[in-house]
Structures are given as structure tokens and as C-alpha cells.
Length: 105
Image 1 (tube, rainbow, N blue to C red):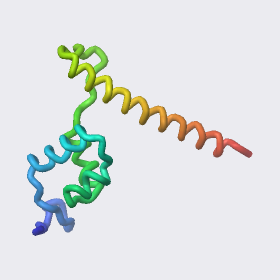
Image 2: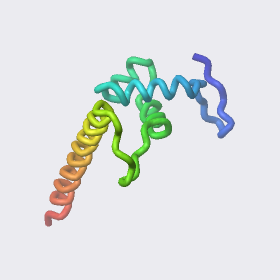
Image 3: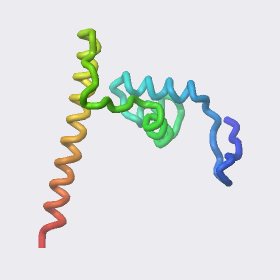
Image 4: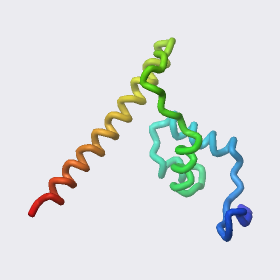
């Protein structure tokens, strides 16, 4: 692919369209694939996919957001919340173990 010199200095950027970036993020969010798998599938670098997810991915809903109307939407939200809970629980456990190791004399 052609690379253009970015206006932010001497860095090079690959000209992917916003539509392409959103479609990659949408594919990742609606599949059970990892960032590495999605990046390999589209011929991208993993950090591109992760950056795009931060920018174009789903935003967190406020606590007082209305409940989904359909059972399918409710099931999707429950699945998403379970994935997030598992990720956060794993992070917490890692931090606990790290603090235990670092606090040893």
C-alpha cells in the first residue's frame, strides 16, 4: 500500500478510510476473535486494530441508561457485561497477586 507523509511530522500513515476502520472494529466487536486474529485477517498491525476500537468502538453506557427493549438486545448486553466482568476480574486478580509479590520483604 502507498504510504503518505503525515502532517504531524515525519511519521508515515497508511490511508485507511474511516468506513474501513469502523467495519474492522464492528467485525471484532461482533465476533469472538482476538485483536491478533482480526489484525491477521485484515492484514493489519494489532496496534491499529486496538487504536481503532478505542476510537470507533462501543462506548460505555451510563448507569441509568434505559434497558434494551428486545430480548435479543438484552441477551447481547448480558453477554457483553459478562465478558467485561471476566476481564475486570482477571485484572483485579493479577493486581492482587502483584501487590502480594511486591509487598514481600
